[in-house]
Image (cartoon, rainbow, N blue to C red; front, side):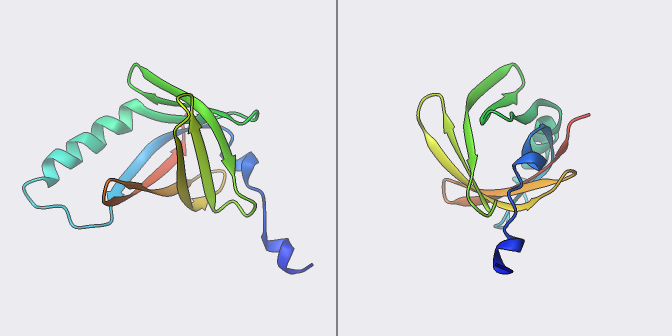
Amino acid sequence: MLMLGGCTDKSSALVKTWKLQDMKYTRDIPKDMQPVIEKKISEMRNAFSLTYNPDGTYTTQMGNEALKGKWKLNWNSTKLTSTAESGDEKDYSIIELNDNKYSFAVIEGSDKVIFTMVPAK
């Protein structure tokens, strides 16, 4: 019984709109590509948001483009599975999730990318 005490469903912390604070690649970025990547991250800070709704739906906003689907946390809130309207499913490893910070890792191609999100004001 004591073991189950640490297994907390963090769905209520996730349900809100999040904006991008930072994005990092886990591999080294070549020096000549760093300015391009930094510019893209800066643009995303102003244009990218994730909204998780209590009914298990989400909206990803990137500028004027919106993608919708369904989300589900696993039993111990360490993995989020999203299913896009197209049926594509993707898993995200949750690094940290509380009322003020949401960070997760995703594999994009051969790269692992870590997103750090904060509540949108």
